[in-house]
Structure formats: C-alpha cells, structure tokens
Length: 327
Image 1 (cartoon, rainbow, N blue to C red):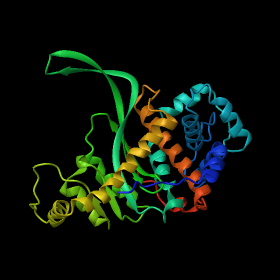
Image 2 (cartoon, rainbow, N blue to C red):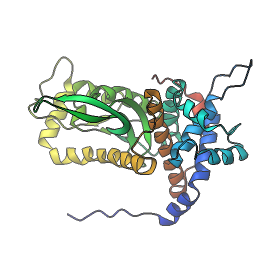
Image 3 (cartoon, helix red, strand yellow):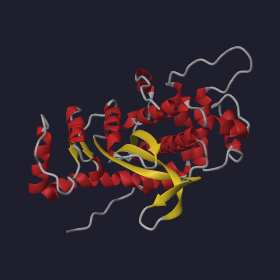
C-alpha cells in the first residue's frame, strides 16, 4: 500500500503566519459586530461591555500571556479601533469569572465557521482534558493509598475533518462521561452545516447517538463495543443495519471511521499553540479559558483557509442566528 503524501502550500502558509495576529484581531472585530449584545446600564460608571470582555480574553489566549503582559497588545487593539478602552490587568482577570460570557463564547465558536459552511460536510466528535493548578484527593481501592491527582476540565467538541474548524463545544468536569454530550454537540453543528458523516470512537456507541445523526440527515460511523449484538430495541432498526455493515465490511467502515483522527489533530493544535494548562482557579474562569482557546483556534483556521483556499471571510449571516447555547 502506497504511503499518502500530503502537500502544503508553503507560500500561502507563510503569508498567513506572518500576518496572523493582525487578521485575528480584524476577524474577531468583524465577528463581534454581528452579535446582538445587551445594552449596558447608563447610570453610574460605565461597565466593560461583553463585546470588549470577549476581545480581551480571546487576545490574551492567543498570546498565552498573563493578564499583565497582554495589556500592551490591548493598547494596540485600542489604537486600531477594535476596543473602546485598554483595561487594567485586574479587569481582565475579573472578566474570566463572568458567567454571561459562556453562552456568547459557545455561540461565537459555532458561528465563526460560517465562511466554511460549503467546505465542511463530514465531522468528528471527541474530548480531551486541560490541566489546572488545583488538586483532588482520591482513594485508590487496590492498595489503600491516598494519591494526589491534578484536577482537570474536559473539552468535548465537534470539528470539521477538512479544515479542523470547531463547530460546537461543551466543557464539563474531568470525569464526566463522553456519550451524553454527543446529542447536543451534533445538534448545534447541524444548525450551521449539512451533516454528511459523523465519526466518533467507541465511547459514543449507543442506539440514541446513531439515531440522532440519522434524524439530522447524516450517517454515524461509530465502532461497536465488544459483546454487543445487532439486536434491535423498539424502533432502533438503524442499530442492526450499522452493526451488520460493521461486521461484514469492516475495512470499508474503518476508512470512514478514521476521519475521527482529525479531532485528535484539533486538540493537538489547541494545546500546542494556546497551551494545555489553565491559569484560572475559578470554575467559570476555567470554562471561559478553554472556550477562548477554541475561538482563537477557529479564527486561525479561517485565516489559513482565506490564504490557501481564497475563501471570502464574511460574517453577515451571524446576525440571523439566535444565541441558544446554555451554560
């Protein structure tokens, strides 16, 4: 079997990398212009707008710097007209704890992929953990010893397999199960994209998950766990059909399934470029940190595709999509 060779448009790649930060601020500014943020109160000191809070945290995540060291970049953003005011570093820290930002971040991550709506039709679902500076105590039953284990947050996401754009994301505690997140991730993705194929590992194998994808017009390629059968329950005919296909045409099935490896690429990109460790000790702060990393990733993907594929980055359609994400 011949080894596949993946070519890289180095000229486009070099141009995108050299101007990435400027384009990131420009695209983020345009994207935020189409989001309907609530009006701030007019009595007393004017609070920081939700729009500016999101800009602060996204730029800080991109730079992988402390709140103090990102202020100079926010000063530049202010001079370029992207934000109203360059904040004090403590203001940036306070923004992390704003619970209102969670739903806006999730919405922005989903709709930021609109320019790639016609490019992506196949998707992958997976999860991975981000470490924190906190520690849990847990009891190991085998040797009766108490061990210290670092606490972490788990990021569940769906991504496009061609460009690695993140199409939906949920954040949970580190030990939360994967399968229950599947339905919401796929439904959020289907609001923007037409589903073709959806691939995921055995942790997501269930009749309900197969039916969710089917009802939304797609086909789920999820391997079956050991000791399961193709026996249907109720109206779950799809389970039996996919089981027989999996057993009889396993090589063909796995060719579709292995698109799932793109989700691992996404997590590698996220952690390598924006860090795998969370600074915040607050739960909401940790969630906002991960979501800001995901938004940065999507903006960087758009920049790369704008140079490589010549895609016009236009966010006008974002104004027509209501914010429906819940914390």
